[in-house]
Image (tube, rainbow over all chains, first blue to last red; front, side):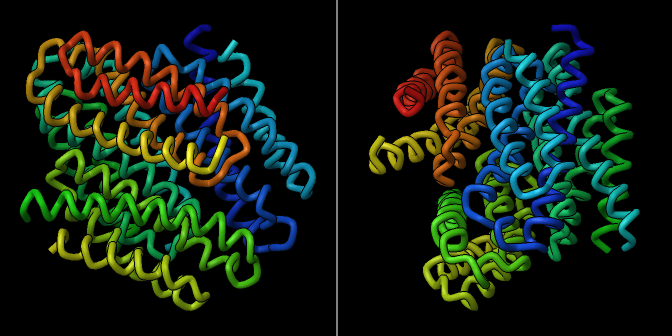
Length: 107
Length: 107
Length: 107
Length: 107
């Protein structure tokens, strides 16, 4: 992977972390109902945490970032599906973008 | 504080987190010597961690963000001084900017 | 502070982090209602995050741990009150214990 | 996996996080030399961070913990090797224990 591709992936992970944490607070906790259903909330928290960890591994230039990118890609994909289902399409789009970017870094 | 001021402070904390982690890896661990002296490294790690935590408190719109901003401001100030001493002036500038921004949010 | 007191405070922060995260998942997200009310959830997440950060500052022997212990003490106190109100008395007790321990370390 | 096995793995990850952060501060930063060599320090920081993230995924009962456990197992294995090489045998033993435990959870 080029340095530019990794820099782009770091940006994407940081944006996904922030977007998910903002949406969790301002959408999920405001709307309630299916937005605070257990599996959706767990996926949001999983996504928020693994995106931050994944970004740090890449910022640090870790030789093992691919393993964390693999995990991050899977989590973001599942979180995107869950966001889609409850109508959080902006958040879903960010998660899907991050899933793709991390998937490419993990390959 | 206005929403714009808080958004700016979140950006600054996230930039400071990333700048410090990049400099720690690419400058401190490359140059060695005083750059890996115990007190300097501890301050760098303190700064990297509290900036991420502080950003998250503000993204979450926590009512208690001021206490974390207070801690973040102190840590960034001390980290700036330590960066200055070892000649990492870019990193010092980012830390000082974050110290000021968080100090204002904590007031 | 003695090393033994700090070691005890690290243990308490780590236990509080884990207790709050377990209760958030297994009680709040199971029961719903007031357990997923915005202010309560934000306090739970604040508490989960600052306890982990505070433990790390002390494990690292940071000279600036007192600032983070001060923030942690405030957050744990407020989280304890919120847990009490929704009937999570075990979690409230752990938060109160952590608030006291961190308060002593910050003094 | 049984609940008891997962609880044991959470304990192991939290102990590995703490052991590595303590050794990084009290051994690596005290001794210097090969102990602060870039690749070793990066592995220590990778291990400290992924162990905390992995523990949280399991505490939260995440359906996706296996992906993070896989990453954690790989990082801990490599960190163990690096600790062994610089004579940090206690830390290496803890990392190896965590690599095995997370490897079993990921299977």
